[in-house]
Amino acid sequence: MSEIPVVIVCGGQGTRMGNTLTKKELIDIGGRPLLWHVMRIFSAYGHNRFILALGHLGGQVRRYFLEYEAMTQDVTIELANPASSNGQPTLKFSGEYEHPPWEVTLVDTGLETERAARVEKVADYLGNGRFFVAYGEAVANIDLAKLVQFHEENGRLATITGVQFRSHYGKVEADDSGQITDFIEKPTLPYWVNGGFMLFET
Image (cartoon, rainbow, N blue to C red):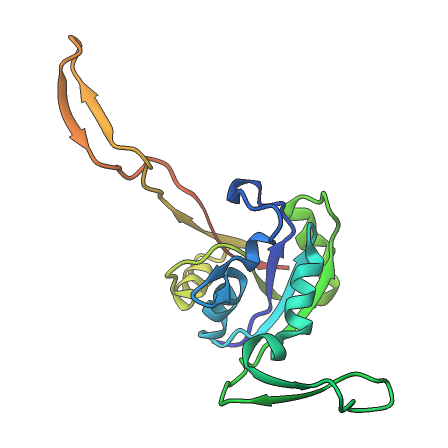
């Protein structure tokens, strides 16, 4: 499969997450932010060129990538030994950490911009052809090769993934007299929602 650029939408306010101080895509899971895990999914299939459509708290995402090396491996900081005349401390990195082969473009797409409009605002970085769109907090066990195959076999301009959520609550079924007839523990809901992994043609 040839490499396909990936637009990751990172502009929302994350109100459903409850934590408004940390960008939702940067919430830590296993020592890495959600966004990193999403990017690793694409990278596992050879897609390493990312365009991040930033908005609310976009500075936190910028800072994460600008400070990526210092944030992901052991570092010794020599405050009394500036590396150059600019007076910045000397940083010495250690460890065997292997950085992923990612190219990351950070694009400010506005604070209140809707998701589709954020994708439109990064169009200049895509070129002509096919591109993925993903949500920065949507982690899934997805086979991207099968997604591309389905997209090609059906000759579509757009293909999205769908998932069915499980209810947070157990379901109680009752007859017309109000007598309980069944309990179903957290059933799968009968509708599909956008799974957060999409493929488009320009």
